[in-house]
Image (cartoon, rainbow, N blue to C red):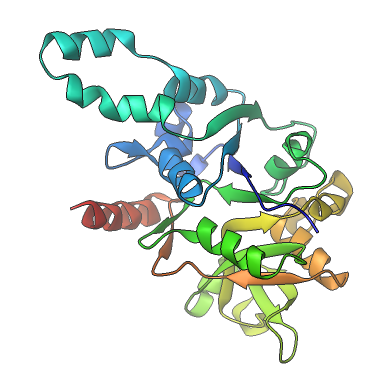
Length: 281
């Protein structure tokens, strides 16, 4: 058994080519939702679930931008607002600097293969051998309700024997071809397989695994350069599939009253932004 998670690995280590030219200058997860970057919304979801420490995996170019955002004091801005009698406008900045969990920013290991599992493998040394942890892709957000991370943590409390708990949501039609499709063991809530990006006709279900995972150190056995999958990439879903296939218990969790949106391309990002604005109004 592993300890309940207190750490989260949050990933923004890609190049976001679909968002060029803006991502030539800033990391993709620094694109805003309202007056907050996507990354902050994801970290706040972790905080709402009781996560105490964030390991943010960035590109070499993105690391100083995140450091400036989360650690920069912005004293000149504070002084100007105070002089103008608008000191209350600085409160959101104070929240970023003082009100979020501890944040450690690291650069993805360039020696690892391309793939969404590589940032998790990069952060391995920040995870103790006796603790579960949460892993999140920063281009996935969950709007409404209490978020997916809390659902993962609560599910793990129900099943402390689990090697992993994965966030899932039903998708329609060929959307399943973009994600991992979940197959359950007969008559069980336990996952038998997670098939990464199957053709719709081959998908065992329309239940998609997305960028919310509760993992244990057992996953690192399968997150190494020798375990690449489709297109020669290192996939988190493949590692979870191998955990399940090896007989280790894997479960699913759905966000209560929350809906998963991806911000991974400009059209999907716009839909997420519209929904975020609705919830804030």
